[in-house]
Length: 224
Image (cartoon, rainbow, N blue to C red; front, side):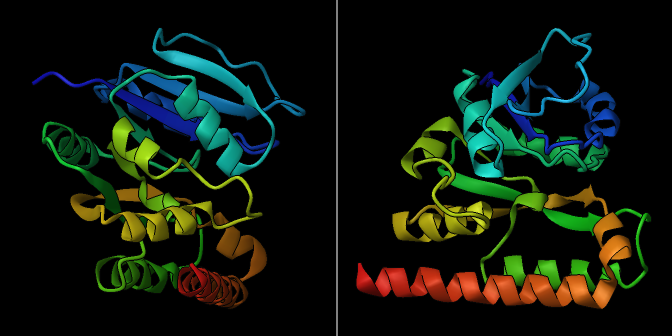
């Protein structure tokens, strides 16, 4: 059965990483590509050379921009990508297979890091695999893909929290009984933040933030 797909890419202020991502999307069977820019600092003009490309302006904030991109599109499936994500042929094949299925699930990819950071990020990739496969906590840099009906059932991304909108969505899938599906392909992401801020410092901060958010979400479930 023919399906339609929209790709939603939030762009932070001053971020130019999307320049490297858009050419890779030429072979992706997408009907719409929403590039969501912060309305207060949209940055440079976007060349709309791809007829599928939509430029969407939204108040800054990843959750707001993700939701704005979803709302600006009409396709049956939604694929949320970070601007510094990079794909390969395996990513596209796994995406095709997943969107051909009539499933109520949230899909995600194996996280891999580009070679623009320290080699220790290989440990972070292993940690992401453990976190997503064994703890059931994939994060947004693993490329969430889902039917629009699933996105709507989850209530979209939570704009009321300052960060961790991807983490919050995964907790919502648990509450709703929606399955998580690991797709058999890689999605690469930049490791530059580990170079800029230091590998150990960045890793430690991510672990601490994840733990604090998990505790907060668990307490909210108990209160509910």
